[in-house]
Length: 363
Image 1 (cartoon, rainbow, N blue to C red):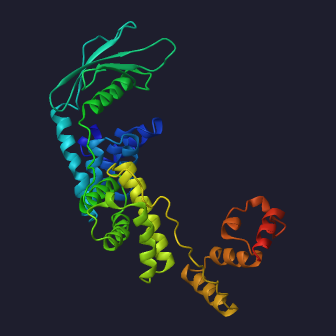
Image 2 (cartoon, rainbow, N blue to C red):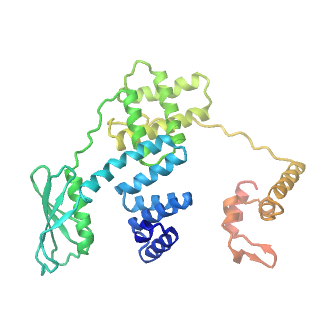
Image 3 (cartoon, rainbow, N blue to C red):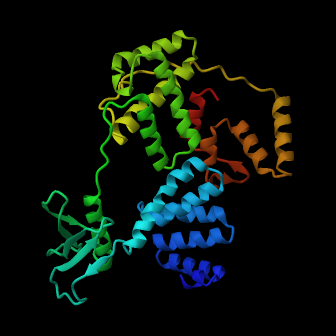
């Protein structure tokens, strides 16, 4: 941090990169490197390091704040302001010295349990002990939980320093008030809760809004319902019929049903825990009739290939790739998976099995 504090950003970036060469999954180094890169204007690289830090440590408050500032800078205010709420955690960490652990024992514990104290954000002190068992390389943390009962959990760490950090996180999690899900919420409350969890999973605002379209269609189909919990499996089946009778294309109705299955099953039932069932679980989407493919003429193909060659300033690979596909008749996935050893004597060789599959498709 010395180089960064002194304003020598280039030296700081080099130092953080060297740290990551030694320990690639170190969240503090990724966050600090991201901050240094952001300061020199390398914003895309900075965001990538903030994301990596949060994958390693999801509750890393300062990394959340740095990511929020990047989103706000890029004009993504919805995600940015939501993420910026993590600043409260950063302030709590600063006041509480990172919810410090007060060591009550010396470094040489001689195999005896290590007694420590975790100071929570509220100022409450929770005593805990680190100990090891025979044939278990990982430390165990022992403490009295919020319910007053004695608890013993594995830190999954074999070194004292990492086990201490893990123990603090375990104690904090136990003493953190659990978020009670809303039961039988209104439509607006259910959508708000879903968007909250979607944003926490880093879904794009456009993706989040797309889920709102079929939900609104469901509300319009059954205006007397007060919330998603009132939709029954029978109503879910009726929704498909009503949409088709209203003139909606089968493909549109299929997409609506698939999205509502996801909303009810993954988000409202499993993630938000605000409904108990998924009424769309057994709704079969309508069959989407595929349009017959149109075979383009040789003139159209040549015109497209000429445009492609001019668009990429004489780069021959796209044209060669498509012409090869046309001659071989295989799918793009099959062609893309061809290895160098399949190119012999100026010819492209396929396995007989691959060509048999292509023949069964009428190519």
